[in-house]
Amino acid sequence: MRAPRVRALLMGGQACVFYGAAEFSRDTDLAVVADAINLARLRKALEQ
Image (cartoon, rainbow, N blue to C red; front, top):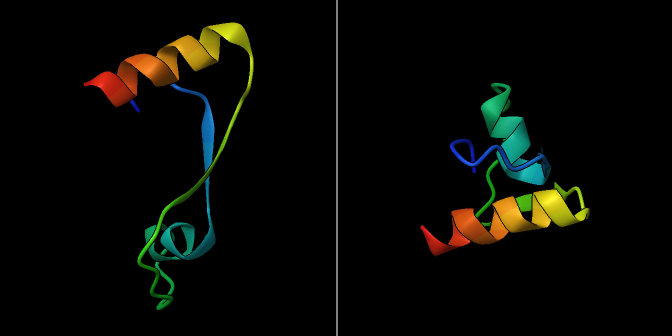
């Protein structure tokens, strides 16, 4: 996600862990900017 520069927001339990909270989550919640360029970047990231 970082290399192709996908614009997204990490949310939920994983975001809490990233910021140092003791929350535990088994999934990753992302809000992805849904414009043509960003979706092409997301497609590239998923292919990798």
